[in-house]
Amino acid sequence: MKKNLHFILYVLLGMGISVAIYYVALMIEFNLLATAMIFVVPVGGLLFGGMIGFFAKEGMFKDNTPFNAGRAVFLSVAMIVLFIFLTYLDYLTCYVTDTGDISRLFKGEHVSKVLNGFGFKEYFHLEYFESEVSISTRGNRSHPIEIEGSQGWNFVVYLLQYIGAIVSVILGAKAVNGLPVCDKCGKYLREKEIERYFSATDAVTTLNEFDSTLVGVNKYVPERIKATNYRYTLKAHYCSECQKGHLQMYEHAFDGKNHHFSPVAYKSLTPDTMMKLGLIKNYGMQGYSTMMKI
Image (cartoon, rainbow, N blue to C red):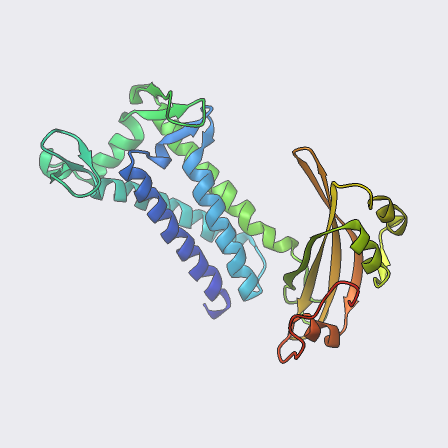
């Protein structure tokens, strides 16, 4: 349990946020589980699955555990439980006003009292197999296409939500396996951005301090100086426990709406430099200028 503490807590946090988002959407008459874009894109499934996958990844990072089949099963079950609970929340907050409108603010009578014997089982069946679903080809609700439940589209949309959620949560969580690890203790390296979007002029000066660069980088970076669509970023990847790490320089090439991002240089960090950059505790040089002094 302790080994997966952050993983479980972060997944629960993501589920809690999903419940809040779903309820707010219900209040503005937008059911995220009953809406698909271009007939096949499950809005709620991708949204909730992607978000919980991100939280799961952060939890595994803190626990220093990899993504595996067991966690994939756990996340899949969690998404199914979440979606059933969201439908139950839909039922719990379904109140009918005197004018016959649905109120999510608990005004009027609950649907189970308005329709005698209409419990969650009946509501679930209505939502998944009989009620209408909103399918939009414009990505919004301005021109929805209403399809009767008898045609089976509502069940298809809900099924796509479950599949989309499971696929997106697994892909989001699986990203943790691509993170760099410390070659000494095996823990995930932390990341800190040191400098962001500095010019090629500064990059040329900084490259002189690097241990290694990609082939030809020392030649082509000076050619970027007169260009305005190239910027550079410095990121530190480090292990504070082992006091080991490295700096990575990345090149950003902006071409209209396109953004190309690639690593160009690498430099190992000593404990002294890590202290100066604020990567490990008990450093005494805050505000240390990183450019030209790395």
